[in-house]
Amino acid sequence: MAKELKLMKGNEAIARAMIASGTDGYFGYPITPQSEVMETLMAEKPWETTGMVVLQAESELASINMVYGGAATGKKVATSSSSPGISLMQEGLTYLAGAEIPCVIMNAMRGGPGLGTIQPAQSDYFQSVKGGGHGDYQLYTIAPSSVQEMYDFVFDAWDIAFKYRNPVLILTDGAIGQCMEKCYTRDYVPRWTEEERRAIAPWATWGKPATRQHNIITSLELDSARQEVFNEKLQKKYREMEEHEVRFEALNCEDAEYIFVAYGTSARIAMKSMELARAKGLKVGLLRLITLYPFPKKEVARLAKQVKGMLCVEMSAGQMIEDVKLAAQCSIPIEHYGRFGGIIPTPEEVLEAMEQKIIK
Image (cartoon, rainbow, N blue to C red):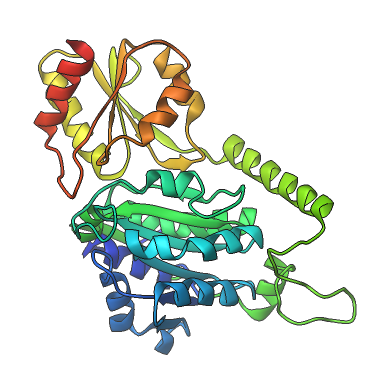
């Protein structure tokens, strides 16, 4: 699978993976700290090689609705933004979920609320996994913790998006987007031919043959009974995701007495904190969440039964901890430690928090 080893930023990795994965169109708008996604795409000029469309919209509102239009034809269409821009996209995202249109969105989180700061944070967890927009819907949410995963998860995101006809959110932050690491690229996956697209997305608006009824792409249904049936269909789809698409990484957890729970940048920090703890003779493990929705409930519950306590490490005031407590279903201490407003905690701070809040 590996084609070439390159040094690149996380944002560059997202852009290069979009080209390599056969993406048909990208519609976006620049915002720090993810502007390099569009800048890389513009520099690579994929329209000259693969035919991929790259367009800067006039706003985030425009870009998400361009995604709606392009993706409704059954093509691979993506966008990216950062926290305030993703907030503007929420209406479009619920329309995409309500119309069951597959697409990929990347959010490089930054500190808030409001315009906040351009520095990294993880305070969009609630927005990402609890809906964000209106209605009973879910975005499949996957959280990379390295530049390599920023690249690889684009390929995974397309698979999930079309398997479940659902938007997929790659939830990262400014730290991973801006850091530079080695990354293995992949061989180019050709864009689907017209025949392939019609076979993969028979629901799409690619023209009406005489052999079937019109394909109608909409999230509007004025008949309450039919809307309820549709919502039941969505809930069944989400349960299937929860059963089959959960991802996590458990490090040094089998003999652990205490566990860090984290994702993304915080997981990288907690990994070093775990190493520092082990060097002191403390049996500490790390549960790295890869999918935030669906949430690894079963693994959290399993580990909670065998340890003395958990520390949720998150660059926010404490959001993910709510799902950890709900999943744990036991009375062990579960505490939160995090910095916010764009401050990244050190491994030493995280270990100290574990010792003071959990181990005591």
